[in-house]
Length: 465
Image (cartoon, rainbow, N blue to C red; front, side, top):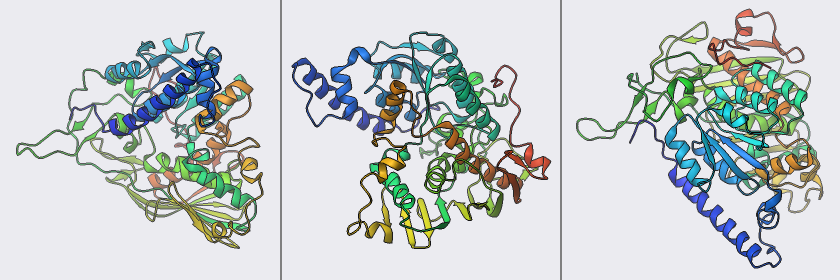
């Protein structure tokens, strides 16, 4: 296996096959001049009957998730341009987009295009904010992958630019719309009062990977490593893989591409990778996505290497927390939100009238069982979905591009929800409890912890509002 490869082909291939079938069906209906069949989704119907109204989109960051987002977007828009600092991914994306999209290795050239109305961003996390802000200032609407930001300060900046520009901005926390709408139904159950007062919620998000010391190697020739690093410090590329002298597979590990998740320089580990989903849904359900906790309590934490003053003492291996249990306390709401690495992946809500568990494959608990004899009001899920008819996450974005309404995963609620994860990571890195002012969005009596709310950016890659 090459240095620059992850096993994503099976997932992308299956998704691509489904989409090709859908588009072919829509195209056949359109070519026949007849009515679009009832079994087409709204997006497929739009593709078949209103191609001239389709906006142009540019796709930036084209790994597994970025490629999938591009294919979803192709149900609603035409891909005019693709951009990546990896030339192999760039060529593959052009092919998947039908071979007509222009290719760029510098996102700024794509943003200069006046004909492009929207962009999809699926770069590593440390690039999200800079590209998104510059896209909005260039007049683009934005669909950006989660976790949206690297720091709390970045979240404040991006919220300000959304206000200043009026851009439509959807964060890719698709659990709010997709996953058979299990999470949406769970939110509707809670907001309908079926659990009574909820005072405890537990988000189980899994543990991060660890690695041995990774050797310094030359970056793959197809990868612009300096540009990939962006705002992060300029460091050597590290990688292991292939086979050993006996022919045995060496586990793939790297400082780059998919593995950026396990380096604090580029991400927040499992805490932000999956916390961006589950903590977001927990806060959405309980109305905590417009505020923040008052305190953060560390109950357990393990990092794969020693830390001093919140920073890893070695730079040759993964460094995000591998196991943890953190409790964020919301005094005014009377809620404790626990984020932990163990237990079944999902969200457990505990209220006065019972408990309910929701994950990507399951929705269970007494309130769910009672739905058979006492269903939710007809408009409960619509109310939870900001008063709109629930649709796929990508369709919600393009609907809002057209009607200029606020998308389901707006930046303001995501910033607040994700701040829980950023605060938890600061507490884990310093291995101590924190006090937080959710109104001022600042630490209370802890200058060292406050220094982690923002971070220094490498010259030439600063984020400006």
